Length: 250
Ligand SMILES: NC(=O)c1ccc[n+]([C@@H]2O[C@H](COP(=O)([O-])OP(=O)(O)OC[C@H]3O[C@@H](n4cnc5c(N)ncnc54)[C@H](OP(=O)(O)O)[C@@H]3O)[C@@H](O)[C@H]2O)c1
Image 1 (cartoon, rainbow, N blue to C red):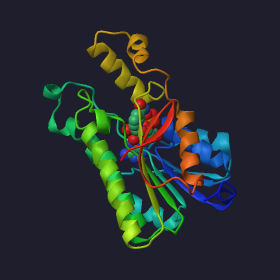
Image 2 (image 1 turned 30 degrees about the vertical axis):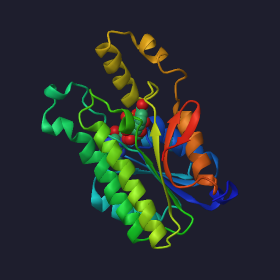
Image 3 (image 1 turned 90 degrees about the vertical axis):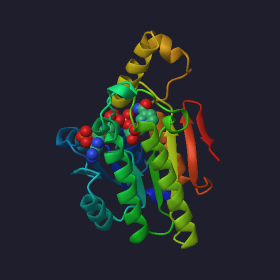
Image 4 (image 1 turned 135 degrees about the vertical axis):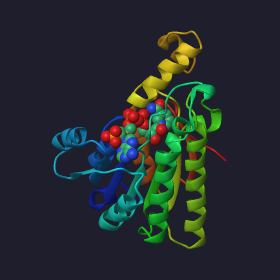
């Protein structure tokens, strides 16, 4: 899909009320797409609608609900589907987690990937459409304070890879891409995690962040997502995302 095609397209972004999702929704909207923005809380979605205008449709819903996935995919038939919503993990060492806190991200992030991608393949979405999932750099590096987060995000990446394979086998022409952003303090979820890991290492936040170089911003994530969606050159697959840009993972 080229940039000009975006003018006629529909994008559905989950977790669009703040952080990466809000920036992704705004960037797709700036390219001319009709944007369906999904999150559980109405007020931040209304403020996004006030900011962007009537090409933005807010939907208050829980993305982990399979009925929500089926209904919204059928209703909107998006050309671009960005599965960005994610639960913030409880930041505690392993032995201070319970099974319920450990598995929270499985109940939201993995369920979302499973239900929505399944619906995208079954409908199916139109040939030329793109599905982007938000995995995490933690899927490669681990995240010892975040319970099951790293494993959940690795599974999101695998589900996306499996779907790319199914799309290719069935000749569906749907591209499936997973993004693995590096940890950044620029969002609610990221700033809590950065503070937790800095404290664990006995560093202040600035010292901790200096280890990693330039900080990834939500605007970087929004711009990169538009680039992935509008470029037919970009092959499906997983990509690590840092402030320096994208690195394809094998
Ligand atoms: N920030 C980082 O450093 C980082 C790094 C790598 C990967 N990621 C991933 O990137 C994605 C976005 O992260 P972020 O940092 O932007 O997080 P964030 O600021 O906490 O935003 C999360 C978004 O997801 C929505 N959400 C959460 N649970 C939901 C549910 N059950 N149903 C519908 N919406 C839900 C939230 O809105 P409501 O609360 O209103 O529902 C919000 O819009 C996540 O998948 C995260 O794991 C983040």
